[in-house]
Image (cartoon, rainbow, N blue to C red):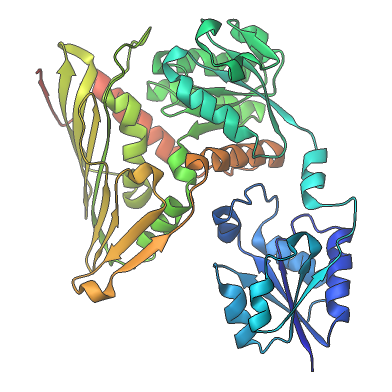
Length: 450
């Protein structure tokens, strides 16, 4: 019996896929089809997959051409599968010519002509393109530039305009967008959704106007300064059937997601502590900001793993802050200690103070170490009492997670379902803690000036 194996994503299965499977089937007696897992697709940069792994596998089975359907989950698996299943022929599309010649050492490699004029990418691109606008100011130029650049990797999204108080500060790339304006309403008339990266004090006003105008919103976290505002915005989004999503790009990084899954699976035992730090030095000059301290800037990132691993139902918290020139809204450095019934968390954030930006998840059988800068990580370790049992994990990080964030937002808009990796409970908890910081409403708070 001649065994043939082939691989693919098979997103939005179409005639071209079927023809390729038919050609592969004709090469032998038994066809094995490997369908790439969501995580593996993301790790290798194929981020705009529309269907889940189970949907794609069922679509392949429904063709009746595959004798066996398996999941491709890791780099190098093709060799393992060829040896494990005693494969005679490896078949793949002709657009990969030369890429898999190394497999000739294990079986015969055949490159199959693809059906011209049809592809999943074209099908995704042919659907409605979401027109998106950027709202910000000169303080966040680097991130606005990154967001626009990363949007080009996502099918179905087009950045059609930008709203800033002073367009002279923009790069030539951003100035070349179809619409550059200082009028928020003018931008809203031309877009389906907005990405808001303005100062925290402006979030509520801008989001509520955007929602009232029927626009979806992706906003840098926290999306509001007070819980009452958050609840009003969330209720309005639900009422109008619109997407309101926190933009914390770390949440969409493959390594970060894998770290969460491993920690929650009990690989380091019961989690008893989460210690996390984020910091950056200040630019020499900032314009127009009212609340630009370390907790507003770094708090959402730093609190994310705490709330996602330990939950949002804590017993108490303590906040210690060092302020800039006695401005009680502008903290140079803040430490937050959070106490849970069976765990504790320590969060350190600095904007104007530099510290080691690492993440440590301590458990009863080991701990997870994510090196600085943990929020951009492509690597982490599980460490044990016996170092020989340590294990390292590597995952490619593309675009700091921004492109994956855009994909998730687009799926939520197009699918009418929540694809955000940050649920509403976590979003609300972040806003609640920052509100307590501004209101000095905590179990114990200390304030000291340099």
